[in-house]
Length: 128
Image (cartoon, rainbow, N blue to C red; front, side, top):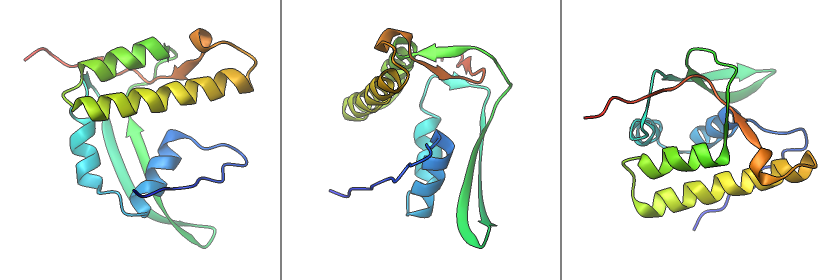
């Protein structure tokens, strides 16, 4: 098992984490393939190797129409459950989002049900 430690003294966004994982060796094509298996449409991914303040980095972006809506944990869980992914990946993904939501609730003095994840508008994928 490989373990990665993040020293996020000032926070870290999902795009920052994915960029760091790609820089550390995550297969970009495999990531794209797996994300395409989610029941979402209307987004594009871009990966760019950059230098910022003298450091090499990977800039990961999700391009989608802007939306002010948010998704709660139960929305994320529903998307994951509907994905064409193995049960192991679904279970691990739901655990990760649950832990993120728990941390957000604790930091903001809230409860799990009120935590939301900012969302750009991803259209549900058309049924096959």
